[in-house]
Image 1: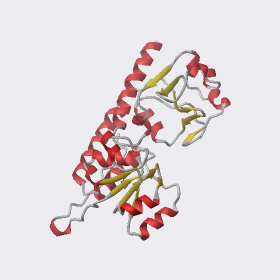
Image 2: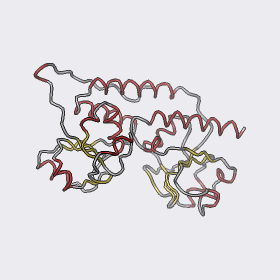
Image 3: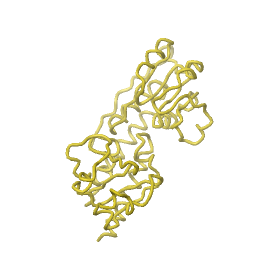
Image 4: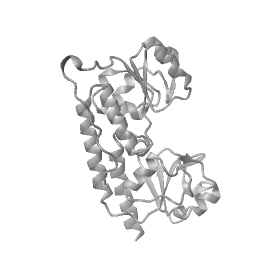
Length: 271
């Protein structure tokens, strides 16, 4: 299955080669991972408080929260480029551009958009060869997993428990669930990440509950989750690292691998 095409990259030679930015600030954990994965870590001069991987980037100064820049700190650092998925305060973009700072937006709501982010980041950082390798890697990975036998499981992914938050259609997490061979519960047309009601939970048809370490508590004691058939039948899959399935960065492939193994084990136990 070819879910995206490799984007052509024009290699410029000699004097025509664009200079890479000397200073980059990332306000997105996924973008920070991607920059490092493509070999652009040397350009990073600042990060958001949510940027925690790879661990060595923790030495970088914090210049805001996820999609929420500390404008004063960033202007003082005078980077050439800010990379983010979004900006909570869109007016900040105008301030940065007035000071000659480029803002690169990398929305990643699907694997296709992740591929676009790879191409754009590689171009901005003059890491075109690395970006081509990454595009080929994820295309081969997706082709391989799309050929795997489907699992007979409708998986409700619990992103958080207080309040309950899950993923509907058209999210990065739901696409990874399907790539791993599972299916979503009946989302009833709901897209994005949302807080389901008890009525929705009881009628969604989920037969497996996927929970992440640190999301809080025992589902069997949760006032809403305890009513799920998956919980009553102890069809609960514990996933160790939420970032692998929730963060749209290069490690999503490892997340799909682990998820597939865990769901296969759960299916064997249920037989």
